[in-house]
Image (cartoon, rainbow, N blue to C red; front, side, top):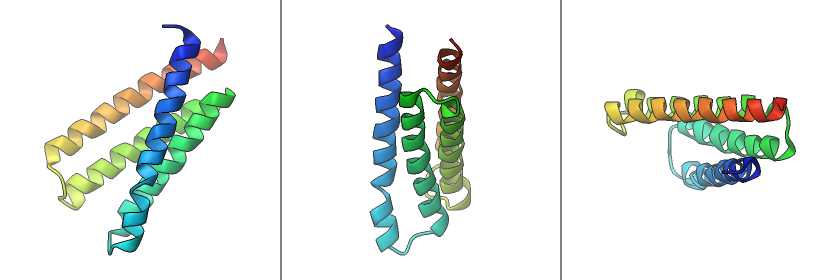
Length: 116
């Protein structure tokens, strides 16, 4: 796959995930939800959209935004699983680990692309 195609796929995936995470916000604002979930999904949306913008513009901070997004995703899943008990523990742990692995792979790719 060409570098520009891979970069475009990363940008689109980050932007789509940002919109997906933001789609939870209206329901969390209206319902009597846990404020930490609202903060978690808001941080995910902001970090994903900022990372998409950073990768698109070629900013040196883009890899850091991707890592911050991965940390927010993992923390939200672990909070939902271990603190609130909304989802199963092992599923929350699995998704958190997978999110961090994908995050570090994408961040390493972006870092390598920015340096070259």
